[in-house]
Image (cartoon, rainbow, N blue to C red; front, side, top):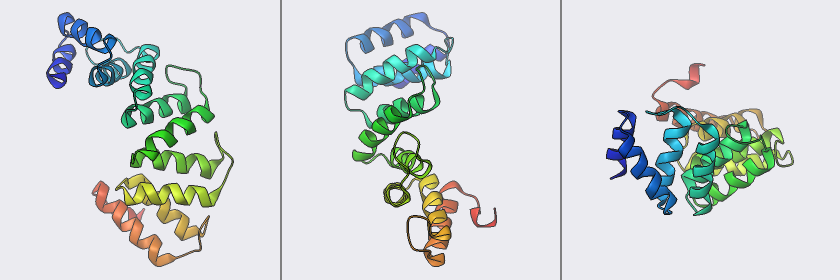
Length: 178
C-alpha cells in the first residue's frame, strides 16, 4: 500500500524506503511515482532532485500523465536535470494529450511565452481552453486573461469574466478583485 509506505518513509523507516525502492526497480509505476515525490520533496530522506528526476522519468516513460507533467516541470525549471524548455513542452504535450489539465496549462504558457515552442497566442489559447475546461484554475485564469486582452482570441469581456469567476471559485478566492 503506497500511502502507508510513504507515511512510513516520512517517519524515517529505512525498511519502508527499501521496499519502495525495490518495487520501483521492479517497474511498479505507483512506487516509481511515490519515490520520485519523496526524493523531490525530501520527505523522510534528504532531497535528491537528480534521483527524483530519474524515477519520475521512468514513470513518465510508462505513460503516467502525472509523471509526464512532473518531468516537464523538472525540465522547464532545471530541477534534477538540465533545463530544457523543448523537452518540457514535449512532456507537457504527452500529459495534456491524456487529459491532464495542469499540463495543458503549462503547454499553453509555453506557447504564450515562446519557450520551448514557437510563440503562438492562438495555440496558447487552445491549450488554456483545454486546461480551463478540465477544471485547472490557473488555466481558467490564463484563458480569462487572453479573452480580456484579446490575445490569440477576439476580446470578449463577458467570457473573460466568466472564466475569471470559475478560476476564483476553484481556488476559493475572489480573483476578480486582484
